[in-house]
Image (tube, rainbow, N blue to C red; front, side):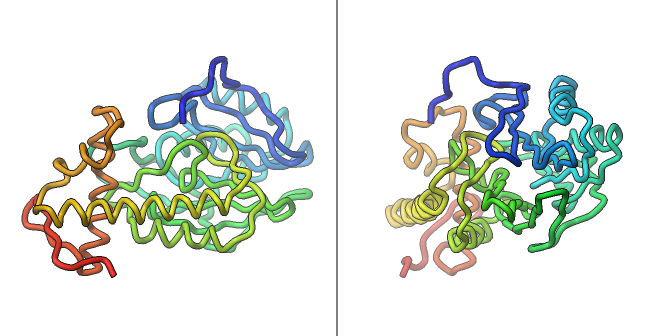
Amino acid sequence: MEFPPRPWPTGTAEPLEPLVRRVLAGNPSAFTFTGTQTYLVGDARGVAVIDPGPDEAEHLRALLAAIAGAPVLAIACTHTHRDHSPAAAELAALTGAPVVGCAALALDDHGPRADAAFDTAYRPDRVLADGETIAGPGWTLAAVATPGHTSNHLCFALVETGALFTGDHVMGWSTSIVAPPDGDMAAYLASLEKLHAREDRVYYPAHGPQVDKPRQLVRGMIGHRRQRERQIMRLLAEAPQPVAAMVPRMYKGVAETLWPAAGRSVLAHLIDLERRGLVAAEGETWRAIAAIA
């Protein structure tokens, strides 16, 4: 998806439905699209803030302006990449709200990434397990565990309206990076299947536009990942080779600067295929040892 024309609504509280507003952070990039989107759920009686975003003063001011003095009942984080959770600590200090949602995760990962590194300072007051809820006047948010993009990733379902806040698990503009050692392709696909079995009305992702046909998009995302693993198996049927040799053939038309990041998802596929007994590694070279059934 191409970037939409400027100006983007950075710093503006956009109403999406009676209980939901969106505030775009000023951190656009090739990996965050127009920026990280923070969601406010509730009204003047009490709100939850989902994915408070990067620790940037301008974004924090925009959030406080949108909150407009309403009680902040919870600050909920889908995962702990640095474009999602760092503002939680400052917002909690200013509002007295608890930080809830995903578990803490501090991972030493020096590989080429297509997303922000982990927020090592994140300290939740309460970790939500799958199905646990937080609530305020007229709204209830239920945690939906969706590991894969990261092992601690959660989505949040707005029970009253059928909306799902999908963080980076399902984005409105691109597929998610699945980067080992924490990113896990098998878990990611299982989480997609889990969402496909649900009947959410709309997705509000952390990056990109809302998704009005959620199950159709998720079905396509699952198909895309299966296509990628078939590509890998075809390439390895030709000859054993390293990830670096596969990426240019698999990602034709993608800017070369993005190839190292794409390689992380290829590696995640290979690790999954290895666990399934279909490929084996010899150093950095991978070879096929069986065919996909």
